[in-house]
Length: 83
Image 1: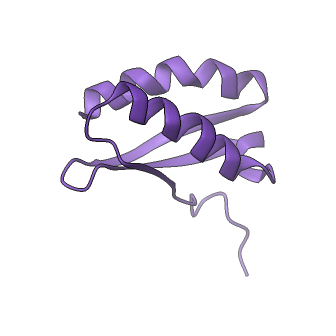
Image 2 (image 1 turned 135 degrees about the horizontal axis):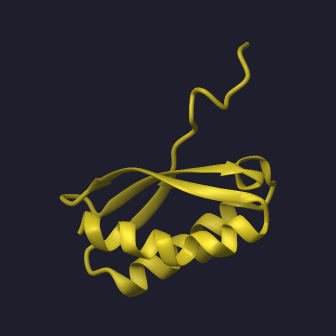
């Protein structure tokens, strides 16, 4: 499943990059069907990133890959401002 997720991300990536963002694969939990990613660049700070993630990335992955049930954005600690 991980290989299929990686291949699908490569298909999605150009659209995200066209808007100044990108996506980083963090993990694939095959037992639960959850894919963990981090949206970076403009996508990491965009107020509609949740829509991009759920209506775009997750929908495409669920359509293309059997077993994917959800895509979750994981904040990158290096991109989070210190408190």
